[in-house]
Image (tube, rainbow, N blue to C red; front, side, top):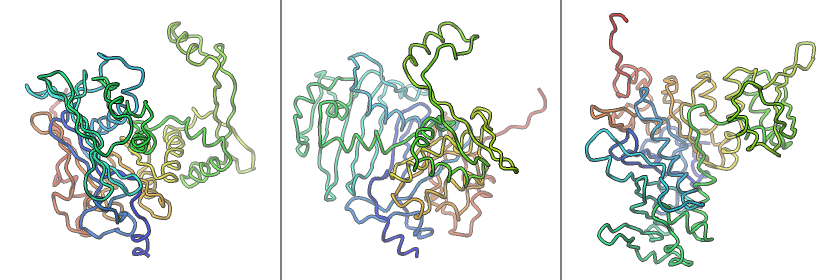
Length: 436
């Protein structure tokens, strides 16, 4: 059965790796890779094989451990900033507007240097390598290479020349369309990829769509419940959400949604006038959704609860249900910070297992998350090449490194015990306190 899975589930649209340099607490290049290593453990479930040139066998996900303030969240923030700049840098901005980039500030060199982002991903079996370097004021370099036959094709090459104050453009010989028009329209604080999309580049649209549609990122706390609520407005979507909630053992027998037009009189009377005016302006003419969960008593009576009266854990599981279902159904790459927050360890294990199971993840979705839940450091849950660590060195710079650097023995070494014993680093250093 494992061999059958390994041969069927081929790489289609997936993340290969992501790297960032000189961003917040990350000074030196940090890379998280989802390329499968040489080990054959869990190959039938956790690895998707590749027959495409320049595309390695890929993992269904990865997990990052580290102490508080080690830089785990900054790595996810870097990926979110890259996604946002691709999506928005060319939309309605003006020259001189600041970009959402902050370099490493704790040395005398990095603060004046650009931040660099680079990502490798697969669309329909073709590998793409895209990246750019930028400060908060301008883009310095941008590149995109496609590997349809194993050899790179130059689609974007752009580099700022400080002597001339102009951009030098590579030949971009494999990119079709109005390249000169797109180059002339690209502001110094915008990406060429974003600009070309605004000007209807058909060839670059799949690359842009991978960032816009396939890459889904959430910070600490996950998502708001609105997306799951929208699924519940569809019959098939609601059935899938209810199945998810039943498996999660939440004792919720149904959910009911109501919708009405926004009424300023429904706002609390004690909120500041400025906030009230802002809310009224944003919500005027829009519909407001209200969610109630339904619980059934032993006698069969239905009891409705306001969603806000459910526990924090129940609210988080409901909010996660939509993105989880949507990602598994569509093969998206899902990235979430501190997945364990407000969730029982067995629930986290269940959520992770949905991605690592070919039967529930037939569309090659991937899950990347940070956590402090060490019970997941189990070789029955993750392959050794799926586990990563993040820690700060003496210069306050975060570094990311894989568990495989320590060559733990396959199916023998207790990873949780080794981590908590300090073998892999990335632990908080807690000093003994004599008193307050």
